[in-house]
Length: 152
Image 1 (cartoon, one colour):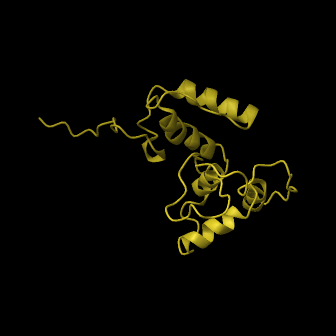
Image 2 (image 1 turned 45 degrees about the horizontal axis):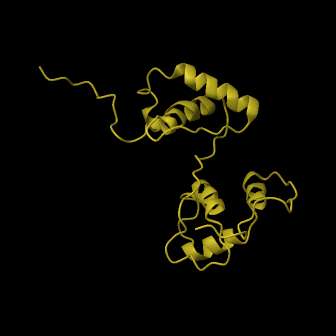
Image 3 (image 1 turned 90 degrees about the horizontal axis):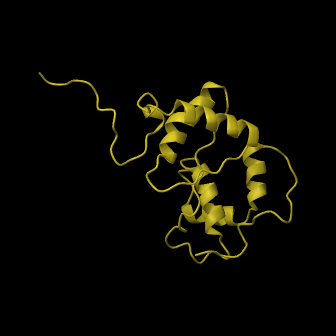
């Protein structure tokens, strides 16, 4: 007799929001992380590769936040490389660009990539978030800057 149940193990990839029903045994972790995020506003997860950080966030925390009525921004990943052929853009900070690229995925698919990256390079990170979140907060000269020291 063939087993027709779906395999709950996704293999060597992280669980996504679509897999939230498959994420088993992490309810206490999800609740603790949710409460910590509400209390602290920013939480840094740090553990070895493959420990389940991405699965916990994507299949546990994000669905919980959405269920509670929060507007959830995409997961932000830092440290992505500068897109090929754009290394010559003056002082482009790859870490700041990684933050924005994580948030802008699929936002402007018709925009020329180089023009878009040059536009982002001209913004301070705080200006970007002010525009994105419409907070209207004035830019602080001490804030991280796309035009700052180039990191490769």
